[in-house]
Amino acid sequence: MHAKFRGMLALLHAVHRPERFLTKEVLPMIRQSLFALTFATAGFAVTPSLAEMLTAGANVGNVPWEFQDENGEITGFEVELLQEVASRLDYEGVDIQNIPFNGLFSAVQSGRIDVAISSITITDERLQSVSFAQPYYDSDQSLSTRTDSGISSTQDLEGKTVGVDTGSTGDMYASEREADWGLAGISRYEGLNPAMLDLAAGRIDAYVSDIPAVAYYLRDKPDMEVVERLKTGEQYSMMFAKDSELAAKANEVLTTLKNEGYIASLHEKWFGTAPEDTTSTVTVMDMPAPKS
Image (tube, rainbow, N blue to C red; front, side, top):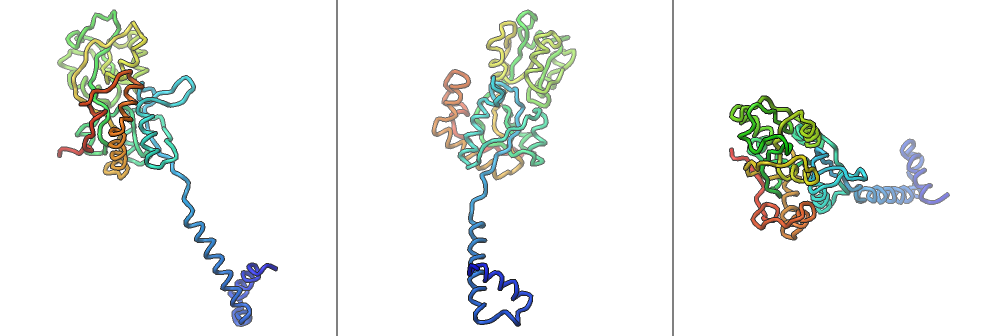
């Protein structure tokens, strides 16, 4: 019998009948067995754990930020950016869960997901309950409609029905002006695609939403157009649970990626133009904090 196994057997007997088995001959075998067991256990302790996946939530269908390509793969500006951030933080990859926009906030707060993306605007109200990394895109709202609608600005919306994305800044913008615009009503949607389908079918008269996504969506749809840019001065970023350590780490990576020109190159890839040097796509900015 191998000496190591004899030692283990002796150890077992010694536990039950110590007065018979703890002899001068047996003790060295027990010591050797214990040493081997300790070494093996230490080996398990120092072995690195499997790389962790970063769990993300996104309202998939939000072009060009996060959507499914012709192969069914989720891609887009923010998807590529988040994948790069995850890689720099030594995650194995990114697991994206398709969640309606309005559900992203509770998903990060509850810990269901680590981070949320979907062209999410940083606002002081949101900063009371969640955290954001520094912004990486500057945006405004837009008013889009069919080319035959007779609508050329918000001045033409009296008696009309406007569509918005539930819980979005477009929803807030339109709701605050519902009476001033004289709207017949506001229809709320879980994303751009269903809203645009209803706009094309005449079930709503106009749509208020982030201008980059709308302009990208309409680039090959000649029957619809953006008729007015609604200045809101918004900035997008990744959203995390309140005071999450991951938010601070992601913020540092975004600083590096801006300095390397990586985010600017993503802008050129997805929008076809280089970003202006004064925008948050290029300029390193502070991590947002609530004003009060």
